[in-house]
Length: 145
Image (cartoon, one colour):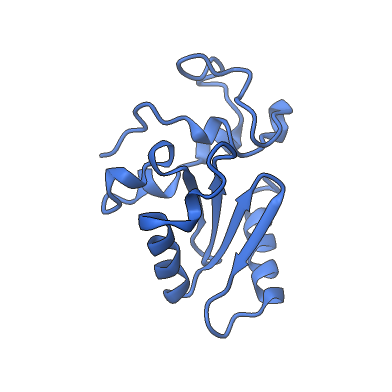
């Protein structure tokens, strides 16, 4: 089974409203590990990035190495590609770009998020409105996080 190793982008990129952590800021409770563990917020307890969940993804796609953390919402076939703000173009090249293209070909909506900017990639036959409905369904299912 994979382990996070030195990667901690999940403690940096996404916002965590339960502890007032804004997006693209290191969690204030992080110091060589989570200082809230095991009492950290539910959003943190349940989160597993795509690299960690998928044994087939190579080490080069570990978020801290490639600059993109993929958050997948399976039932909705929606992926958030959260880009390290210090590497804003990381999603545009190599393995990351190929992975995103494959996801879109496989019917996934891919939202690339770089800071406050979002770019949407739609699979054939999916409208922007349908993509928004998918992500809203994922947020509702996850309790609004």
